[in-house]
Image (tube, rainbow, N blue to C red):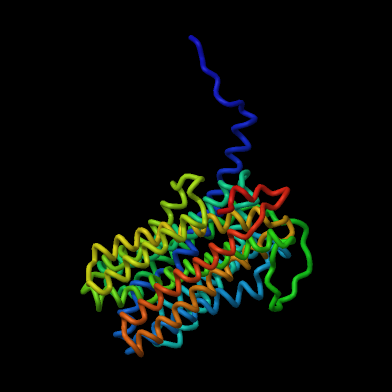
Length: 411
């Protein structure tokens, strides 16, 4: 009998040894990000239960952003100093504590505190898990795909899962979080398989740090262009993560929480699919900006015509734009980072992302209260497209940076 030889055993072993830690890091990242979006289908239930409107809903969401941005500013470089594994463990702990707060919430104060803790966990996990995956996985583009897939995939898993549970289980504002605690336990076991990949330890002091940027004017401009474009596209995330459920209920007449969760989740699913399946030649700032403009115009049209199909079409286009922008931006960030500042530079990139979210959401919430849905949504559409075009214009002025092949990430 003739046998066909497979890969040498010496090659299989390193691959197998690498697969488990990569899967563990991606799982932890995914589950923590899922926890960030569990609240989206529940805002209307809490609003009825605790008697608050759009402005308070916006403040509850902004509490989350405060936690994210605060942690990125103060502890963005923490895992560069003390290691990836301790910071991943801290993120899981904060997620667990915030989940307990949501499950036991009996008023607005506990909701706000829990959202801050949830945001702090997100701030820790985004920079740290992204750096950890990049250091475990051989191949910059593969690492960028895995990191963005975990980030956006977790967000979609959280909102869709919470919507399904909220519609079909009793006491959804509690049951959703008790179920999620089981997932946190699984993530805790996965943490045991994550290796330490950070360099030599250094002394770390909690303080607000200056924003990191790559050395060299051309490299810094390329990084800033990706950050500005991410800030523009994140306005879509902010809308879908805060006020979209109320718009779907009030303006489109959708009351089923599972449908609301799926409608919002379609944004993140579309982003995930775009990250994974978009051909490399289309992973450009211009592609993301174009899709973003189409998506926002369709969403705006849907809100004026009260058309759910048009809203879903706009969601798909906008989600694809977010996915392409995120993957492109993380690819640029990783290409420009150095071993000693990888987490810090990732933290700065995510500051662009979340500062864009909070600005858009605050403006949207206030305008919705003062001028109504149509004026606020038009303003959001114009602002998102304008910021994205600014990032695109800035990116066109960048020059290739050597020795890194920045042409892989330029427009």
